[in-house]
Image (cartoon, rainbow, N blue to C red; front, top):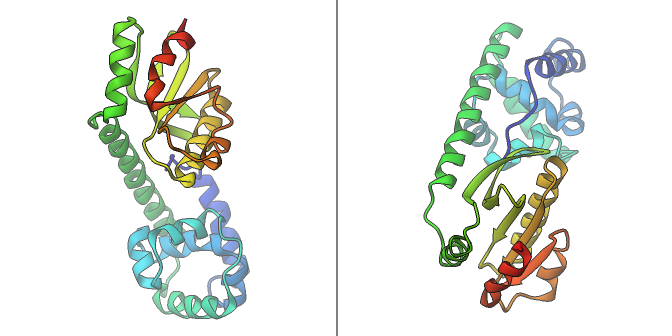
Length: 237
């Protein structure tokens, strides 16, 4: 996941919105929780919990808490909101202090960004797959400059790509998966890097992928099958 653009000023604005909606945090009702999942970020900072711990408190996954906070989930069912409102009301400190909440926000933001950097470092140093080894060998045989597992800036932040050819301005993404969900992910990623960098893109997929997978890769400039990686040579000319 890319780094968030939600900063201290954004947090202060949200804090004041939550403060007004809850009568200075005196009334945490289910209707407010149901209609405003994004308020979870403020509540989480007030109880000083990271996403995993907040998830445990509410019996939710880390991913669900993240979806609440970025409004990917627009509304929480009423019965569930009642349960969450009760827990949050019990967990909130007696004295609500914006400065403390802001300190917690800054702390967790730094930890999160550190995690992203560590994730990128791991991706950049990961062992190459058999498919990637074939691409690497071809690029080296044709004396093409390349960077493997390259972290690039995209329109939604930093993302890691299998190959980046700096002189050719080409991104290569390869997968041995037959999953349509994986194809959707690759398609999304290539759209986002093209919104930031003017480049061409190549997808390399297994020979036996379905037409559904191919359709989901339509934003790539070229799609090659694993058995025909040699066709990459003609694209690079």
